[in-house]
Amino acid sequence: MNCPTDNFICNPFLYFHLAANAIFRDHLPEPLGTIIVLALTVAMVTTLIALIVMSQVWAERRIVGFMQGRLGPNRVGPAGLLQSVADAVKLLLKEIIIPTQADKIPFMLAPLLVLVPSLVVWSIIPWGPGLSVTDLNIGVLFVLGLGGIPTIGILTAGWASSNKYALLGGMRAAAQLIAYEIPLVIVVLVPVLLAGTMSLGGIVEAQSNLWFLFFLPVGPVAFLLFLVAGIAEVNRSPFDLPEAESEIVAGFHTEYSGMPFALFFLAEYANSFAVSAMTTTLFLGGWGGPILPPFIWFFLKTYAVFFVLVWIRGTLPRLRYDQLMRTAWKVALPLALVTLGVAAIELSLIRSLLG
Amino acid sequence: MIAPTEALVAGSFYTFAAIALAGAIGVVLARKVFHSALFLVLTLASLAATFVILGADFLGAVQIVIYVGAITVLILFGIMLTPRNVELPESSGVGRSTAGVFVAAAVFIVSTTVIVTSQWPRSMSTPIPDRPTTEAIGQGLFTTYALPFEMASILLLIAMIGAIVIAREEQ
View (cartoon, rainbow over the protein chains, first blue to last red):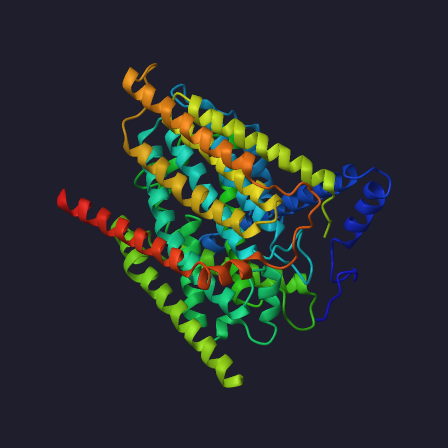
């Protein structure tokens, strides 16, 4: 559906945007008005992400429940929909316990280091044409940079807890994230190469005729590699070694309780959703699609990718440490390099044939 | 899309510059190595922000990807493999102190000379170019600076081979 940003059906935030501008930017001196509008935008995006995370937690628990032949949460609210709200309230009310041996400031800083980048990513992911907080011309690189910061948070959590299981979890996280970041970065270059831009909006527009998933032969390979490396980057099952509950209690967040734990939890789901959204943007044509408004298409595709993540979690057992490393360095990295090479050759061939 | 005003740009520049300086002082003064590493993250991230404010968005993002995302993670990883809670001694001997003072003075003199003798643009209002900076960087790397670029690659390759050789000898 062809959609201008000043259409109320296409842009669900138009009312908000107009109201915020009318109230703050027209009556207050610059730059105060701009700062307030920016702060409000950030607050709105953050609130939306929190709501999305609640929907995801519910969806994941229900879906995994059905996959494992049980019901999942179904007591609080219709079909258990309010279970996440109840859990959030419970976590808010719980006592925050800081171990006496812990390094207190880094201990409390770690959840923020993990959470904040996963929220900032949402400032550039386009939900529709022109529908992002800002569209950077280095968008893809920005996302990759933000993806590296949670590692520091996880390492800090592991180190500051003064707990050997937390430390082991932190070490595992660092090794895993470094290993999978390299194929991830290389494979992200395939859509960048095909679109000829690093702006996420530009990449979506370049897919208006053909999703990069269907750009044979490199598309499907790059898509799968991105999905695998993406799951590994956000520590989801089957790559959840940093928090493997059957081996190292709860890994890096063993010592966390109450709200700091809730922040880790929120970050994990916000990251999963960010990976789903990036997969949609880079390979599945982003907000492109017929009839329905763009932002609906964006969320349909993103939730579909998230369903696949849940499905994988419900199906595959956790990898062993050596299998994890072998997959990263001996399979994913060479495959990513070959994919990038083939994409470059194919693209220059097409360009020279078409003139 | 909200265009940044000049006051906002100047304000954010001074904020990030102050944070970078505070982080750098923290790196030097922190008693635990781990805290130093965390202060280093702060400094490097603020530097990336100043790059972005100065219109070098690609450089800023690369700074985050490489220095914050990779190098500090490696430093932290190394710290976690060393014994816990090692605090630095109050004094590190006359020889090391003298060498430290000498190196610090040399770096200070060189950077001050460069800062004083360079021609700096006087105005903050130079518009940030709308064109992607990646294009110019790519052109430069493959034409004017092709030789230094390749030399750097070979240097990194040598370092990597060296690391592998050292790691294998210990087995």
